[in-house]
Length: 309
Image (cartoon, rainbow, N blue to C red; front, side, top):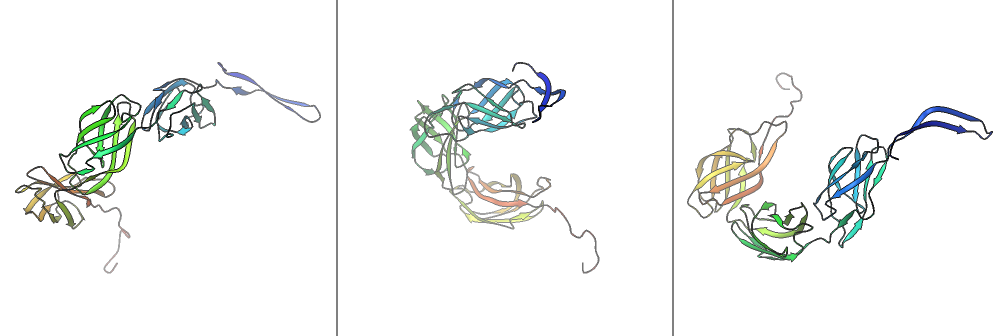
């Protein structure tokens, strides 16, 4: 319907008697989808859907599916919804875009309004492990996903420097400085937001190792002893130490032990957990993931008492 239509509700009993309530029901304008941009993509692609009455006379859109696969809703109103495509089929698949409003109304696009492109695949990572500065070659098919270029690469969660790419089949990157022995995914992000992911495909090998931080929790003024191996990162001293993203004050340092004083941390309503990062004068980082917690007092129970309480 292109306009709201008001009318009566009529109940007919088994005896044939009629009961009427005038102007008791309205047929609302039927929602419609006018465009889906882009009309094709892979996991991670952000899709903008426009139209009219997309909320189905309700307050929100609660579900959106692209070719039968539920998408992540990033933004929505009555004329526009932005979603992120989730993992799709292993082969190219076409289908409708379907929106479900909180009223239960279903708004469906024209046939084949969305296409899941066959996902890209990483076939070779050479080398598959390394340190800061390691040059890594990534080979595969359709590495740009549904886009035209790769704009970002992460190795085990840390962004790498993209040096070159050839025809969406060959990439060369430089590994960043994580400073910990960690294995993780390689994630390629294309210019349309789509991603190509190879799980557990890259291992960072740290030059140094942080074994412990004692204590592992505290507040501003806490003295922390950090123990490990090759903490200077091949250099002759320590440049700085970071506790949960807050610089600490270095009191003493050698290649196996660093003593610092924690500086005042953030003031949240809950504790903040972060990494212990030792940065040598060569700028090489050595990291203990989750090694420091800025603790806070959240409650006192009981809040009153006497000697012996």
